[in-house]
Image 1 (cartoon, rainbow, N blue to C red):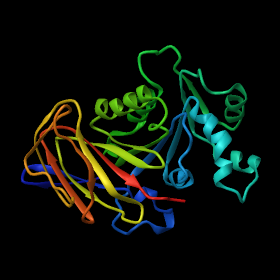
Image 2 (cartoon, one colour):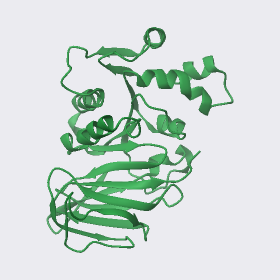
Image 3 (tube, rainbow, N blue to C red):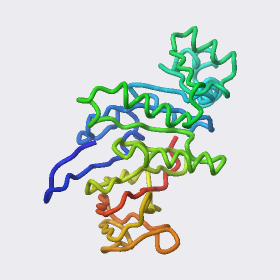
Image 4 (cartoon, helix red, strand yellow):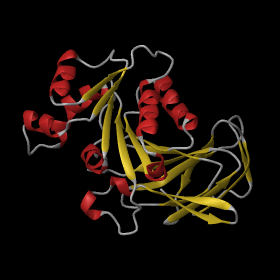
Length: 267
């Protein structure tokens, strides 16, 4: 993540270059510290790319079952055992009500740290993982921290809503929720935003939604239907089914916004 000051407000720069193969990263890509959180939903087809980008991989409880069962389907050049030995998360964290006993034993024997938070039933497993990442990241590294989350979209809507709520709770952190079809991230009102579009990977469909409070003034550039000092709230107008019309989208708002963009058929 990059910042620079323009007219007394910092600009936050966003890019989905983490979806590119590691060898094809553009030279301008910021040196982000990527952490990966795997939730208990089907893995996206580009999971090996995310794994390769991440410096820390955390499975949220049953997310470990997904790595154990599904990674071999994405790496057909290896047998199941070789794949399982290759993809070992550093941490498994959560209330441990979903992880299968044999999966827990396997990763524990491989050196994975098992962080049992079953005593805490007030927060979701994703909330626990994000809190853990925030607490373990040194202050001087937090400006470059970006948390990629798989399995946060799809499945039960109450789970999706809770995962989106985590974006708002940790609005001072850059967190990206990913599925095969789209990504979602929060654009905090404390910054202007420049979003660089990787057109081979994402778009053209996108949307902007206020979260936490209505927006009385949102302005964009780079979209087919730009907003100009627009008011947005649920029950009235929100920006949905918009189209990216430029390599750079800019957003400025007096409210926290959710940015979502479709993903192309990545393999």
